[in-house]
Length: 165
Image (cartoon, rainbow, N blue to C red):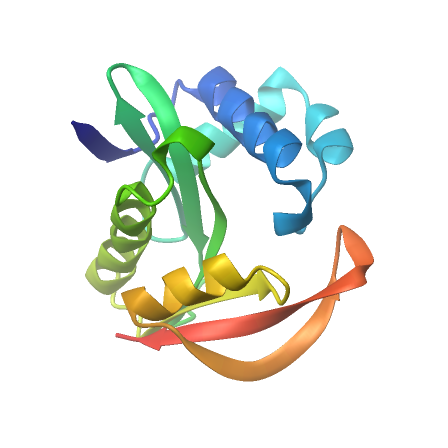
Protein backbone atom coordinates (compact mmCIF):
# COMPACT_ATOMS: atom_id res chain seq x y z
CA UNK A 1 0.00 0.00 0.00
CA UNK A 2 1.24 3.46 -0.92
CA UNK A 3 0.77 6.36 1.46
CA UNK A 4 1.35 9.90 0.25
CA UNK A 5 2.02 12.38 3.01
CA UNK A 6 3.53 15.76 3.54
CA UNK A 7 7.18 15.89 4.54
CA UNK A 8 7.64 16.23 8.30
CA UNK A 9 9.73 19.13 9.67
CA UNK A 10 12.43 16.81 11.07
CA UNK A 11 12.93 14.87 7.81
CA UNK A 12 15.74 16.90 6.29
CA UNK A 13 17.98 13.86 5.88
CA UNK A 14 15.24 11.78 4.24
CA UNK A 15 14.41 14.70 1.95
CA UNK A 16 18.08 14.91 0.94
CA UNK A 17 18.34 11.19 0.28
CA UNK A 18 15.29 10.95 -1.96
CA UNK A 19 16.05 14.16 -3.84
CA UNK A 20 19.62 13.06 -4.55
CA UNK A 21 18.36 9.62 -5.62
CA UNK A 22 16.02 11.36 -8.07
CA UNK A 23 18.78 13.57 -9.46
CA UNK A 24 21.15 10.61 -9.81
CA UNK A 25 18.58 8.37 -11.49
CA UNK A 26 16.95 10.94 -13.82
CA UNK A 27 19.38 13.86 -14.21
CA UNK A 28 17.87 15.13 -17.47
CA UNK A 29 14.44 15.54 -15.88
CA UNK A 30 15.28 18.30 -13.41
CA UNK A 31 16.24 21.96 -13.46
CA UNK A 32 18.80 21.33 -10.72
CA UNK A 33 21.78 18.97 -10.63
CA UNK A 34 23.11 16.30 -8.32
CA UNK A 35 26.33 18.31 -7.89
CA UNK A 36 24.46 21.44 -6.85
CA UNK A 37 22.11 19.78 -4.41
CA UNK A 38 24.67 17.39 -2.92
CA UNK A 39 26.65 20.46 -1.88
CA UNK A 40 23.81 21.72 0.33
CA UNK A 41 24.38 21.43 4.07
CA UNK A 42 22.39 19.41 6.56
CA UNK A 43 21.02 22.74 7.80
CA UNK A 44 19.84 23.59 4.26
CA UNK A 45 17.97 20.28 4.04
CA UNK A 46 16.50 20.73 7.50
CA UNK A 47 15.22 24.16 6.48
CA UNK A 48 13.74 22.75 3.26
CA UNK A 49 11.90 20.06 5.19
CA UNK A 50 10.65 22.51 7.80
CA UNK A 51 9.48 25.05 5.21
CA UNK A 52 7.80 22.34 3.13
CA UNK A 53 5.98 20.73 6.04
CA UNK A 54 3.30 23.37 6.67
CA UNK A 55 1.55 26.38 5.27
CA UNK A 56 0.60 27.51 1.79
CA UNK A 57 3.87 28.91 0.39
CA UNK A 58 5.53 25.57 -0.33
CA UNK A 59 4.98 21.89 0.27
CA UNK A 60 6.75 18.61 -0.36
CA UNK A 61 5.16 15.17 -0.33
CA UNK A 62 6.63 11.70 -0.02
CA UNK A 63 5.13 8.50 -1.38
CA UNK A 64 5.90 5.75 1.13
CA UNK A 65 5.62 1.99 0.56
CA UNK A 66 6.45 -0.47 3.32
CA UNK A 67 8.41 2.17 5.19
CA UNK A 68 10.47 3.20 2.16
CA UNK A 69 10.18 6.54 0.38
CA UNK A 70 9.45 5.71 -3.27
CA UNK A 71 8.49 9.13 -4.60
CA UNK A 72 8.73 12.86 -4.11
CA UNK A 73 6.93 15.92 -5.39
CA UNK A 74 6.90 19.56 -4.41
CA UNK A 75 4.79 22.61 -4.95
CA UNK A 76 5.41 26.28 -4.31
CA UNK A 77 3.96 29.69 -5.01
CA UNK A 78 6.38 31.84 -7.04
CA UNK A 79 5.07 34.93 -5.22
CA UNK A 80 3.48 34.94 -1.74
CA UNK A 81 0.09 36.18 -2.97
CA UNK A 82 0.14 34.22 -6.22
CA UNK A 83 -2.87 32.13 -7.18
CA UNK A 84 -0.52 29.91 -9.23
CA UNK A 85 1.34 26.93 -7.77
CA UNK A 86 4.39 25.46 -9.52
CA UNK A 87 4.66 21.66 -9.34
CA UNK A 88 8.35 20.67 -9.05
CA UNK A 89 10.70 17.81 -8.20
CA UNK A 90 8.31 15.10 -9.35
CA UNK A 91 9.99 11.69 -9.17
CA UNK A 92 9.05 8.09 -8.51
CA UNK A 93 11.41 5.21 -7.98
CA UNK A 94 11.69 3.18 -11.23
CA UNK A 95 10.16 0.13 -9.55
CA UNK A 96 6.94 2.06 -8.87
CA UNK A 97 6.46 3.72 -12.24
CA UNK A 98 3.16 3.05 -14.01
CA UNK A 99 1.61 1.86 -10.74
CA UNK A 100 -0.31 5.04 -9.83
CA UNK A 101 2.28 6.45 -7.43
CA UNK A 102 2.98 9.44 -9.68
CA UNK A 103 -0.71 10.25 -9.95
CA UNK A 104 -1.07 10.14 -6.16
CA UNK A 105 1.86 12.53 -5.76
CA UNK A 106 0.57 14.99 -8.36
CA UNK A 107 -2.91 14.83 -6.84
CA UNK A 108 -1.39 15.68 -3.44
CA UNK A 109 0.02 18.92 -4.87
CA UNK A 110 -3.25 19.68 -6.67
CA UNK A 111 -5.24 19.10 -3.46
CA UNK A 112 -2.81 21.27 -1.48
CA UNK A 113 -3.04 24.02 -4.12
CA UNK A 114 -6.86 23.93 -4.08
CA UNK A 115 -6.99 24.02 -0.28
CA UNK A 116 -4.71 27.07 -0.39
CA UNK A 117 -7.05 28.85 -2.84
CA UNK A 118 -4.76 28.54 -5.89
CA UNK A 119 -6.43 28.87 -9.28
CA UNK A 120 -3.84 27.04 -11.38
CA UNK A 121 -1.01 24.51 -11.12
CA UNK A 122 1.85 24.82 -13.61
CA UNK A 123 4.93 22.73 -14.28
CA UNK A 124 7.88 22.52 -16.64
CA UNK A 125 8.69 19.21 -18.32
CA UNK A 126 11.61 18.36 -20.57
CA UNK A 127 10.26 18.38 -24.12
CA UNK A 128 11.91 15.07 -24.98
CA UNK A 129 10.31 13.34 -21.99
CA UNK A 130 7.27 12.08 -23.87
CA UNK A 131 6.24 9.62 -21.13
CA UNK A 132 6.07 12.44 -18.56
CA UNK A 133 4.12 14.69 -20.92
CA UNK A 134 1.59 11.93 -21.61
CA UNK A 135 1.32 11.25 -17.88
CA UNK A 136 0.65 14.90 -17.06
CA UNK A 137 -2.01 15.05 -19.79
CA UNK A 138 -3.81 12.09 -18.18
CA UNK A 139 -3.95 14.07 -14.93
CA UNK A 140 -5.49 17.03 -16.80
CA UNK A 141 -2.55 19.27 -17.64
CA UNK A 142 -2.37 20.91 -21.06
CA UNK A 143 0.55 22.41 -22.93
CA UNK A 144 0.80 26.15 -22.40
CA UNK A 145 2.99 26.83 -25.44
CA UNK A 146 5.92 28.26 -23.45
CA UNK A 147 9.42 26.85 -23.90
CA UNK A 148 12.79 27.57 -22.32
CA UNK A 149 16.23 25.98 -22.00
CA UNK A 150 16.47 23.45 -19.18
CA UNK A 151 18.41 25.30 -16.45
CA UNK A 152 20.56 22.26 -15.60
CA UNK A 153 21.37 21.55 -19.28
CA UNK A 154 20.78 24.40 -21.76
CA UNK A 155 21.23 21.92 -24.65
CA UNK A 156 17.79 20.55 -23.72
CA UNK A 157 14.60 22.50 -23.48
CA UNK A 158 11.40 22.21 -21.52
CA UNK A 159 7.80 23.18 -22.00
CA UNK A 160 5.26 24.55 -19.58
CA UNK A 161 2.05 22.66 -18.83
CA UNK A 162 -0.85 23.96 -16.77
CA UNK A 163 -4.00 22.81 -15.02
CA UNK A 164 -6.80 25.21 -14.12
CA UNK A 165 -8.35 24.42 -10.74
